Length: 113
Image 1 (tube, helix red, strand yellow):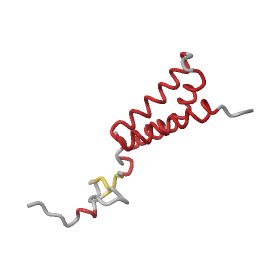
Image 2 (tube, rainbow, N blue to C red; image 1 turned 30 degrees about the vertical axis):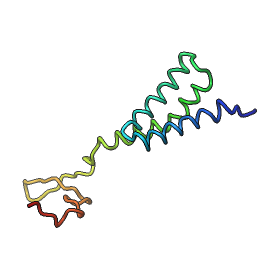
Image 3 (cartoon, rainbow, N blue to C red; image 1 turned 90 degrees about the vertical axis):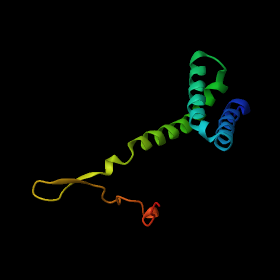
């Protein structure tokens, strides 16, 4: 078994360069670039376009796109899973944010004038 420089090393290097360039020069497009590169790689391979290089680009971009998707889905959750119903009295309930405080310590003493 031998390593093909163009297909086996060039494709992951291309994905890495795209990730680094978009992360530093255009950070607002980095997430979309991950999805586009991975999707284009798999779609191109499925259509028979580009051979092993395009397929390896899709394979190399998949972890990048999966991480971006995971971060996006996790951010949409917002922490609502940490809210718990707590009994105050015999018939009164309230929502508790235990163990997280209801305010941010960073802005505890700030007053707006």
